[in-house]
Length: 200
Image (cartoon, rainbow, N blue to C red; front, side, top):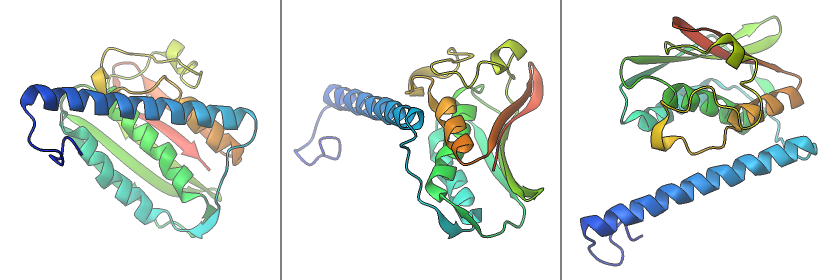
C-alpha cells in the first residue's frame, strides 16, 4: 500500500527501503513455505487434492507466468506439449514442481541467451515432464547431491533473487515420490542442453 501511494507520495529513499522490506517478506514467506512442506513430507501430512484434469493449459499458463520472472535476464521460455490425456492429479502440486524447476533454471543461468523448454509427453502409461535449459551444466559430483536438503551446486549466479534455503528440489522429489513418480537430472558440465525430469 505504501509503494502504491495509498498513504501519499514517497521519495526514492523511502521507496527503496519499502522495496527491500517487501523482498525480505517474500524471502521469509518462501522459507517458511519450504520448511512447512518439508515437515509435512517427513511426517506424511502433505495434502493432495486430486481431480480429473488435463494439464496442458496449466503448463502454458506457467510458461507465461515465469516470463515475468526473467525481467533482468534475456530468457526465452517455450513449451513442447504433446496431446495429454485427462488424468487424476493435483494440478497445483504439479505446477508447484514445474515452477520450482523453471525458477532454478532461470536463477542459475547466465545473464543472457538462455533458452528454457518445458515439455510434457505420454510415455509408457505415464506423463513425462521435463524442464530443459542451455546453461553451463552440473558437475557429476553435484548431481548426486542435488536433492539433498540445503545443498546448492552454485550460489554465485543466482544473485539477490535466490530467496530459498536450497529445499526446493528436495520438496519436488518428495512430492513426486509420494505419488509414485520419479525425478532425475540429465546434465554434463559445459555441454548443453540439460534437463530435469519429473516422471509421473
